[in-house]
Length: 199
Image 1 (tube, rainbow, N blue to C red):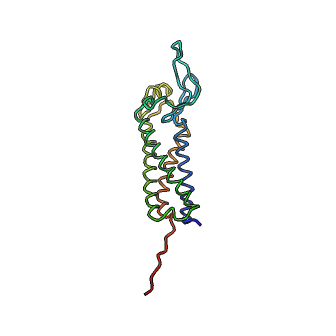
Image 2 (cartoon, helix red, strand yellow):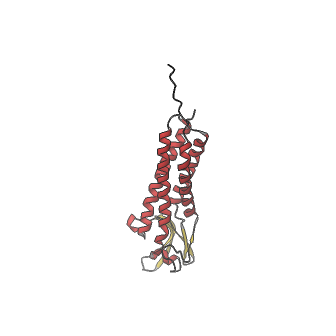
Image 3 (cartoon, rainbow, N blue to C red):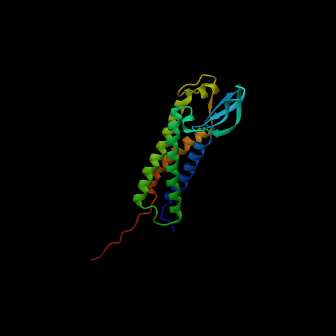
């Protein structure tokens, strides 16, 4: 028998859905879409698709594959490096809380009233971290790599000839739903009945 209320069961499943959405959106490189040599290019916070590279003869070619930057310092913007860390930590924290909540659906007394409040505070932190990372990401649109794909018109918080793609929205939605779940957590645990002693 579960130790969660009806709201608690709803909280557990919505928390897991939000954490998965934010994590998938974070991992996928389809945040910003531009064009280079008539080829769609995509930029995420730490991954990219169809990126330019110099070949052995020194001419520019488009590598048509998705991959992450070789090292953390290769991420073309300090803002994207900060976003990578904040969203990564936020997604990890959201996933930890949601998996604990899912366990509480099957195992009694994992989520007590105190644990539910702590989980809510941690979910609030996770949602804020994901939201901060999503908010900081557009500050990196002034990097040379992005400008090449956005008609040399992009700058911080202005994407020029580029458009936002589905991964950006999925991550933002996951962070927003995680914030909502932090409120639901306060009503997740069934109240424990304390015995009354008759004298």
